[in-house]
Image (cartoon, rainbow, N blue to C red):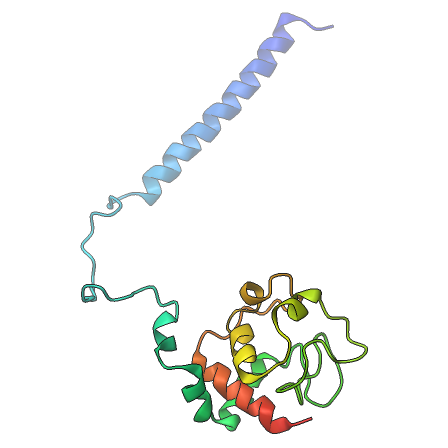
Length: 173
């Protein structure tokens, strides 16, 4: 039933398959690397960066102005435009959605809406949603309150956070 010819055919089939894949790999490498060696081309446009400049772009330089000063000059109508990012999960008409409603949130106790299932992470980090705590939370929700159900990445610009908080404050309860 099993003779040497069957074994030879199986080994030959695997060897032939390996050869086809190896030749295909060499051909693809030859086609896609024609005329260029990686990293040897001269860069088309270079931007000069002064010594010591933070080129990370992580928003840390924006925080040079204290939040209280930015919040004092915040624009509620600009905050309404920022709120469009929040509309997917929050409402301002007094009804809950994926997240709790946000009208009257400024000055409200954390996790105080009856009937909404909060994660315990918010209560562990904040007591009242004052502008300073909202600013801290909105900058990086997951980093500020690990374990929170809010999956939004946050608002990196202090101006956007201040305008949004001013808008939410203007809504009242």
